[in-house]
Image (cartoon, rainbow, N blue to C red):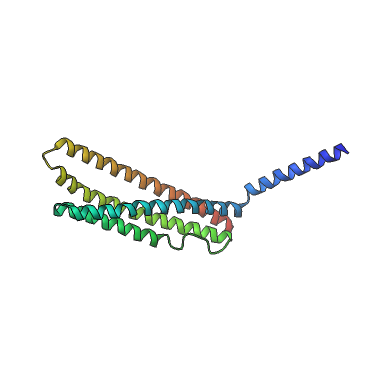
Length: 194
């Protein structure tokens, strides 16, 4: 009697392990879980983009409004327009990339590939925004600090250079991440076809 219960327990345990192993190799489940996990990432990404650009626009508009000279007004005005354009871009870029049209493997793969293309587009806009920021801040620093404060100018230009290097490294890392993600998703697509 005890032996039969013991065998049943081992059988149940073995079936549990097999179910776990089956889940680990369950391709449809992996695609669905990956897509859901990337949805959470996308929500966080878009929220941060909107928060940063949304906070920057009113500050830059205010700085452009109270600027004492034309160069400062132009720099802050250009940056505020760029940030507003980024807000519009974020809404436009991520439309239709939130949910798959169905709960099928193919739909999850297609959604993931769409998201990769949208992230690539976001990287391109990131390069453009970084260039605009640099082009606006170089004359602004020259105007604000001028030739009368070489140490302050050197510090400001050093900060701008570090900011630019950080932006370049971030955009390169993001582009690499998108490439890796796309490679994985294309692997899922090949398995579906094969």
